[in-house]
Amino acid sequence: MLVHLWLLLKKLVLLESLLPSMGKVSSPAQVKHIIQNSADDWFKPGYDGESGFGAINAVNELK
View 1 (cartoon, one colour):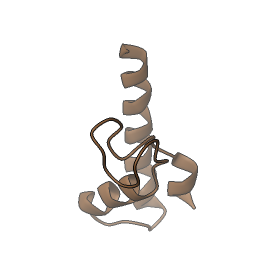
View 2: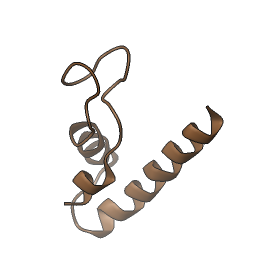
View 3: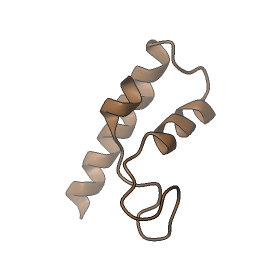
C-alpha cells in the first residue's frame, strides 16, 4: 500500500512540474483538471466512490 502511494505521489510531482513547462497550464486548478480528465476510469465514468477519477495516465496528460 505504501509503495503504491509513493508511486502515485511521484507521478503527481512529475506532472505538476512538467505541465507548466510545456505551456499547457498556468494554475494549480488547471493541473487538477488535466489530471482528473485524462485518468483511466476503472468503474463508472467520472468520479466514483471506489476508484475516484481512476488511475493517473501520464501519457494522456502529456499529449
